[in-house]
Image (cartoon, rainbow, N blue to C red; front, side, top):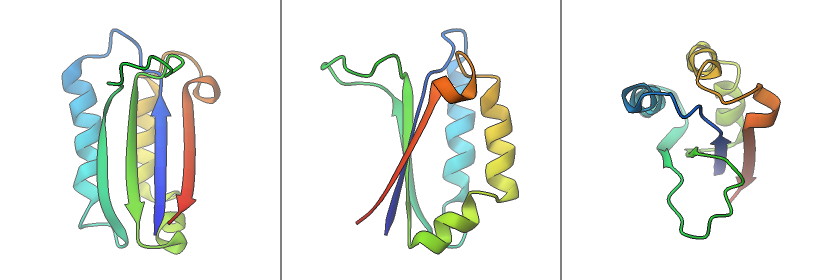
Length: 103
């Protein structure tokens, strides 16, 4: 199994409805994209305060590395990522972190 985690800094002006729609697009891929087992996402909610400005995050569980590797260049993923770009509070390289691990 592969855990794919993404952390993002979104503009404060992004409407909650737009964030919900973004996460809904990812959620809709569960069951339709081979090997994508689950999706969970939302705003930062810890009292620790060590999010370093990252406002939202999500995780996806893939059956294996091959499933994750097929998802990354997929048309579905690219379309969602394109819509996300306008929501970011800065350039992509400084506002998005992705981290994957096997379990």
